[in-house]
Image (cartoon, rainbow, N blue to C red):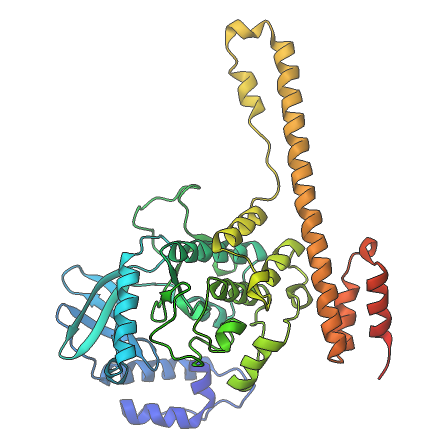
Length: 451
């Protein structure tokens, strides 16, 4: 935001009116890095403007500054006066509360969120009304949102992206198990807590966070938030009219973009795929100048495979991502739990050995005289176990490779039908040499034809 202010004189004037006179140098030309002195002055000016704002007064809380603002609510960073801890307070706009659907959605979202107990779902601490203002108090995410992290230019390695999406997928699976859909999973609704979880401990069994190397090995606990659009699974939404699109364009599934009120868990699977795609490539799967065009792309087009935009993306993870983004809901993962299982399998590579050395060193004295036989038995068992693990891993890799190959052929055919031969050529070029059958050769020849 400060970089925008450094280049936009109109926004600087608006801040000047809000916070009083403050000399500013000429706005930085577009495309040039603003001087550090200008950024410092703009930050001071923005803070002065915030202090001049009149925040609502909620008993027991001190509102400090605004974290975010939308059409339905404003989120503040606040301090719980009695406990002395920072919290996030969402205050609904009066216009939103005046709508019967808005009030009902608010109550339903708060009730569902308060009932959820999961380490990767944001916690509700309090909810209430004061002088006509409806508010909900949630735990404060010091790391901001995943969207903020990405906007700051942060990059995640493929394994870090898979880990983060798996944790959020586990939270979605818990929500689905309670019979509800989220309907608005996106980076802005994934919050990053940087302090320890309630247990205060972290073990491989209960670990709910991840370390991001590009952020100085800082540890985050990603948490799913904003349950304002939650609704029951396979139940007609009485709060949404047929044909009305509810959700965020670019993050919603094709069937959700069409405005149907009959939706299932597959819409959240799609949104998880969108988050994974953006983490792997640095951009969403579809981008357009208008909302109408974006919704059209979502319903009609296929996204470029992540490996075209980022060659470091492993084939197995690309297959998982593209499976989430299948147009037909029946072709996606049937459950969030099955998506989580595939992400866990990807993260568990390579296959690990057992503790044979420890077993041999601690063998009891009565068995020591049979040490040769025992060694052969343990060695044979380890060999069989390793062979089974190798076979299992090879089978999964072969299945993943075959599925990815077919996905590439299908998408290349679609590109050719749309006249995008260059994209089709790039996809076909990435196909394994030993899988280039008659279908591949036909598509390859088509990609070489000139208009």
